[in-house]
Image 1 (cartoon, rainbow, N blue to C red):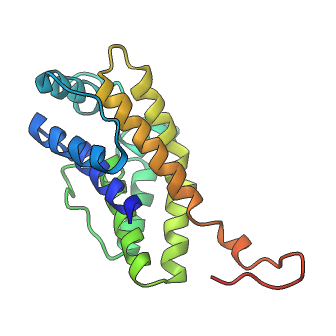
Image 2 (cartoon, one colour):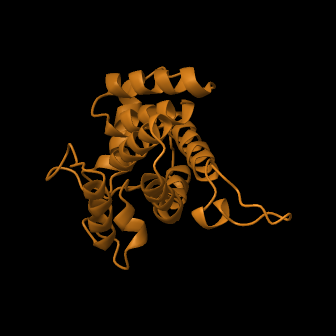
Length: 196
């Protein structure tokens, strides 16, 4: 449950447009994970947020998978379309369709939170495999690079390092939450099969 709540708080932070939204998301994240830095100047945080993730200048830490996964670091590449396919398999359409590429970190966190919540209520092997694949084979391939860009940005406010660390912890916990499907039913040393 905390994984889902953390994903939602991170999603809300990366979906933020104004400083008050960032502050609210950071408060929720701090309630879940603790140790958030104190912020004296939210206008500076909003400025830094735009510099890192929004623009108008070149982004210091683009929050899009395609920038890190596709041969050309462009938006709306092959990986974006693959993410859109995952959403379609879930019966979802991006709430920001045609205004924000589907592979934006906030949208991916939203999809993970939705899958995790559904799995907590109704176990489903197909959904579990989709979730595992999305986290382990997609998000783990690009999110660490995204976090590194946040950390390497000159003069990054402590809020962004904190959020980057919480994102890293969330991703590591999410990836470890379920073993790959191939090992779930592998025989143990006594020849028995593992069950869920």
